[in-house]
Amino acid sequence: RGMGPNSVIPDDHEYDESVAPGEEGSAASSEKGFIGDAYAVYATSSDKSDQDERIRLQKIINELKEELKQTKKRSKYDLDDVNRVNTSLRRDLERAEYTSTALNDELDLKYEEYEALQEDLEKFAETFATQHEELQQLEGRVKKLASEKEELQASNNDKSDKIINLEAQLELLKTSQSKAPEWVGDEIGKLWSEISRLKTEELESANHSGK
Image 1 (cartoon, rainbow, N blue to C red):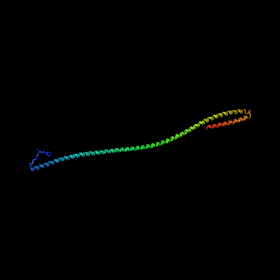
Image 2 (spheres, rainbow, N blue to C red):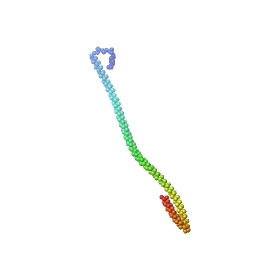
Image 3 (spheres, rainbow, N blue to C red):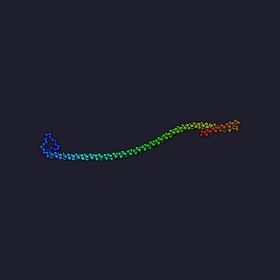
Image 4 (cartoon, rainbow, N blue to C red):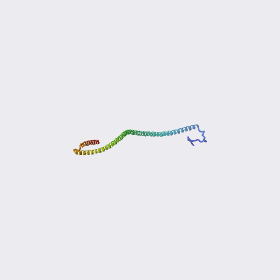
């Protein structure tokens, strides 16, 4: 029974020492050739496995490179989007700041106008109070003058009545002058003087009331 290169030799097996020397060299040569062929097959198989592994790894590397490339593109697009958003937000912020500044300026102006109106209102209130006080004083004077006018009117009425009576007495005295004693002329003169005085006072009272 023949044995292969990987066959295990039993412990009780004894080599045949009667092999001729030529045959022993031939056997050794055959064994070396077999080992060389086996190594060549193994080396070829190993090289093929390494090549397949390199191909597989290269494929993975290429896929990773492509994925990295796509990732870079997406990152660039995302960065561009972020930059655009930042630019838009910056513009919005600048517009908001400009609007805020304009509103603050307008608010300051309105506040200044409010303060001016408040001062005018306070001045108007003071003026109104002063004018109201003056109006009350004028109303008091008007009432006083109206009362004085009524008093003067009553006095003038009395004087008018007196004048009428005195003129009646004067006419009566004139009628009886020719028959009356001398003192009647003196009385007539006194009556004329009283009438003149009363008329003068009446005229002055009328002028004063007119004022």
